[in-house]
Image (cartoon, rainbow over all chains, first blue to last red; front, side):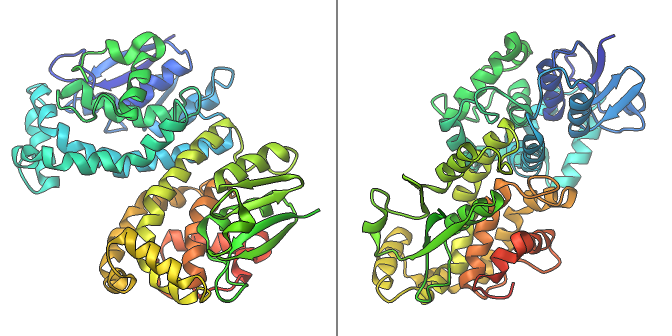
Length: 229
Length: 229
């Protein structure tokens, strides 16, 4: 029986744009596990209870939330499938990468994508999204996004250490992608799904890595609705 | 025969303050390898040729420079000793941590330590150090360090993702230290060796991790000359 994944969707059900859900989606593909994705909107809280945000998976009898916990579950439950971490050192350091992505990369990215997210939301979700985000930001979505161009050089510079790593090896995981790649890629796929804004120059080694990620699993992420990058 | 390590020293030969040499020193201890450290000053370029900076090790017939290359060498040459990476995923992600430390953490730390480094240098090294660093910074050592207090909150915030990881696991490597821990610790041990400036609050989970690192290998780093942290 396929694993079910509650996957954040926009007004258009096929447009999936949660950076965290993309981590899970890629991890499931890495493990070669069949998945049935269920489009989920912010207003559908009850179907994922006791969790209140996605990703949430249903694997047999188990309902599991939080992308990191899900990755850990998949690694333990399917030890004969390709490993997401390749060793205990890889698992421990993937948690560090997860923490960096959640605390540095995604907050640094959100300015470029926030207003575009709003535009793609289901009408039911728009009031919740605007109210909750504007309370957190202390300004309107429009104001927050107005001068995004000005923030682009600092954002690109914040990725310099990742870029330098990708000049030495093709993936963060080495010569093939591991869960750490999916963590970071989730952010770029989120942006790609809902925004035409160009985060990276095409010549950037990070953009070239993103192309390799888009090619993974027969173009799983590339085939998903999104904007050209 | 013990491995030789050329190790950056101050006017006082026992004071070792290179963040990169500390990575190697801790890696050698992790592998349980005997080491003979040779105090080295910036003006001793010829003894480490063809390299021009430390760490440089001499392991039998091989002379090897660059802390990352040395770690890789130790892992390959001594596979029966405790692993520095614990798997191919751990090695690949350690390179990412290395890149972060070199490009983000150490440049963020240098303001707090630079003038104190100068004060501890051998007299022969002082003119070289002042000239080369002031050319790079575009200002005097004194000017650069004058308002270091003002930069402290941003520096501490830049480590937030590391701090959060260390709330979940005792070491970056998981339940025991791996090379990634030595990479990050090298920066703190560098600061501790030459500066009384308090980089972290004692209650900071990062400071508590640093205590655990100072305890490693019978207090190897704690016994080295330095300031209380």
